[in-house]
Image 1 (cartoon, helix red, strand yellow):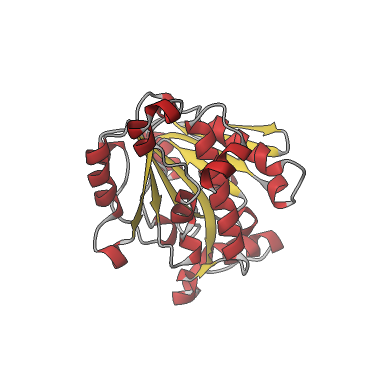
Image 2 (cartoon, rainbow, N blue to C red):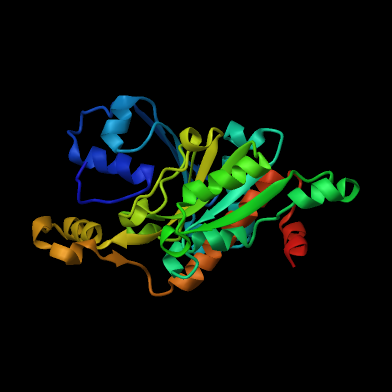
Length: 300
């Protein structure tokens, strides 16, 4: 895979491998499938073994990507339909069907808009652990959910994974859901795509500032990663746009400019929208039988 193309999305890594390979080549250790679900596209990429890891540069596991163009176009019932579809995809992971408490970890920096997907999504999560413990008669139908915003090393002095691990050791969740911002190869996917995986996450990897991994190895329990791309690496964007126009670029000439990060001008609104979508989808996945209006009432 071209080392200058940076992406956190498995479907883009798989497509990039095929672009660089011979037409008849088989992608080793990877299984991919795409389907249309109503107005949305769902792509599942499974990295099966070490060969697949080497080919895509992604850890072994399952990656589900939902593309949300209908939501961006404000089609009728698009938000409710998108939440229901994302909740369904979340529940396809056995870790989220287990009995017990769940911990939602909002990763990133709320003070930097493109990095605020995690903390903003936590604002829309129905935190119920204390309610199910103290008022079981009223809230016994809910599953216990707790949440934490880890901040970033530069503002807390603590690795995100270390903070989440400390909280997990206190509340004993059966699984952690880590929500973070990602990087995409294509500007068309920014805040229009959600990726879910069972591989955990490496905070900061989307902007080339990778920290300690947050996964089942580091926590000892399943970690489901939910992410939305909010930025494109400048070098990646230049190479991609040049390829579409039939031109050729020399990445070695980019210098420091190639390390810049590009984000849409309306990123503040887009991040709020995608964070709300993720938060509501998690609520539907955790608490069966809820409606969007129920979540609105709970959070009001």
